[in-house]
Length: 386
Image 1 (cartoon, rainbow, N blue to C red):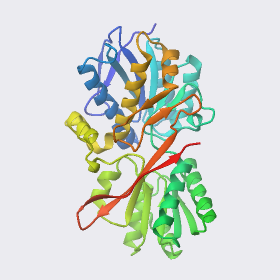
Image 2: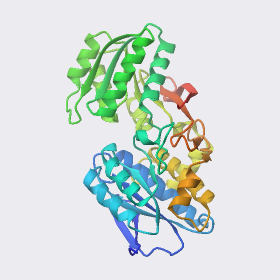
Image 3: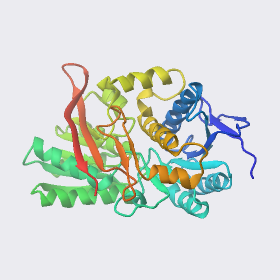
Image 4: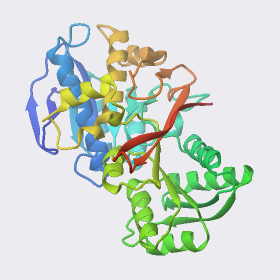
């Protein structure tokens, strides 16, 4: 048996403290991007999980046992993720791996999961196809809000509900998942009778988005839709505004979206999201704010995805009971429903045929210039996940 050690993520990402684990803890391993190119997203997910379970442990743990989270920084590098996963699965006390990094790290993590029968929770990044119905992998589960095809269909339907004869421009990042989802948006929009003037796709290291914005503006787009990493979305919008474009831009709401809406303050910049914003002021948001204050370098509004993942894991561990092993925990996750108390529009429900969720709930947010605040433009709308 590998000697167990605890690598707890400190307040400053990348600093770790090693202590000896209690012999009777629930042991989880998190491989995440803490200091790499996706740290603003994935690092915040890791912080949310860490802070949540620190509180759980202070209040007696789960079923009388503490939860120990081993944290390793993969910087969204597949080779680092592979090393992390190998280390985790060879620890006989470890029950489950959590991954919070870019999708390029998924393949080696999944490979190691299958080799040793370790369940994996994908938290904060794009959910892999292996968690979707009707035949999900029995070891793979996902709590993060992304669902590319369903997301863009919702956005197209929203645009059409606001402006029936909209002329639509599209922008993606030139990576498979983003480009593919926007291709799907184009086909869906055309099937709904919308005029689509083009799909621009910017490579990841793009420094100047003006050429892409120029094509969208000159094409006559009065709406632009993007499903991409945040940099592509916001930089394209800002370039459009610099060109004098007066249309509306709707983008997928990553965890930075709430703070960005406050920064940009433009009623024509909309986000659609599966996470409720902290501006909603729900009791759960106040709870997160109070619990996480002073414990993360990120804005606390970034912690939503990590909190959702931790709540779901807590429910799974409670259901699995004690003593527990990997197979028992995976079985407990196979039939789980978790009330997210307003962090999202409805519960996460997993079944043997669906390890993503049965229903997705979307909300559209924008900026209210008169009130100088974020406002809800469309309340929770559900879509069945098939």
